[in-house]
Length: 412
Image (cartoon, rainbow, N blue to C red; front, side):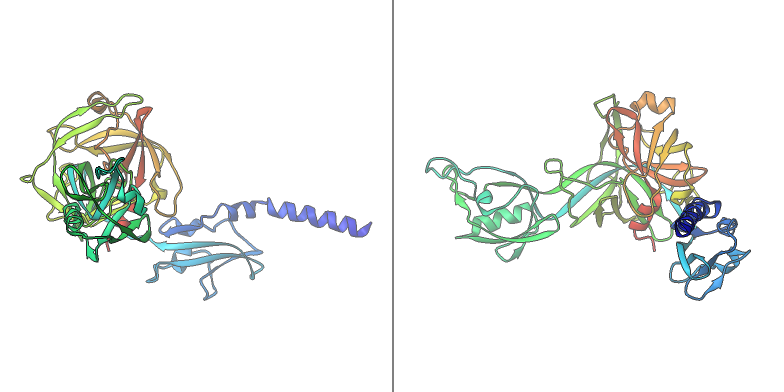
């Protein structure tokens, strides 16, 4: 009976301890934060038997956390909340928060991208004159979306090069094919077309693409830029395109097809070989395209540039979108941040915004294709870039946090 009472008492104490004010404060601590003026008050509500230790040095953090936590060359400190000085309960990583200044974009840009090898975008049959047509590519195990990197021991330069290799072949061709992240070695035997006598592989391939998007920002220190906020994919296969080389080019906006519920609108732009070259493309990844600017491209609204905001600084409320939807160039339009999702690493959908500017709504109906990459500013800082429109509500769209794009652009 005594043991049972002691057990009940211990359970009650444990429950009370776990749901007490001190434990609520500990559970509310972030797993990762930045060293700034807010750091000092982070552990202010804790008292004995709880304590805080920094790294392995065992330095107690008492009143002045800012004095104990100084920016470190290795990227920050770990502070651990302990019970009775030896039972770890929660660890907080403190990172050095440095100020990053960038030049916001908003300019409409043409995108030209040449892929590595040749991308398979479709299959077809070859008429050999012996009944039903055959598809050598399919028989070899090639899939739509595959990238042919090597054929007959030669690195494939482009689609035309692959055709020349095929025409010169006298038997089976050994191919190295990239499928997703995996490399496959396959053998394909071209067959002669009965109509024109040309040896064919029974597949359609492509080695380049072009489109319209929006420059998000560039570093005034390194001239590295980020744009789009999402990858360039093949229109037929949906596959993300590898980058052999490419450029962003000044694009003139000719008009806008306004978006309505269920039908996304689009910016109608034009660029040519004579248009101004703005920068290279060397990266096409899940959160945008990146490269190096050839020269400064000053934003007329923020000619001195702006500071980059960290994700936890973003709040729900008014913001500004910079974009180009007519011949007048970059303009600022009002919007509202409806949601800001907590993120500690790069992900595409960090915020949801809604367009509130009457002028932009009248011109475009909201967010349209070609506005991907349009920068979002709040309190004078760059917080993110538009990535996707809600198809059923063109006033709303997803945005990526600008910090993730800045980290990916190689601004070091």
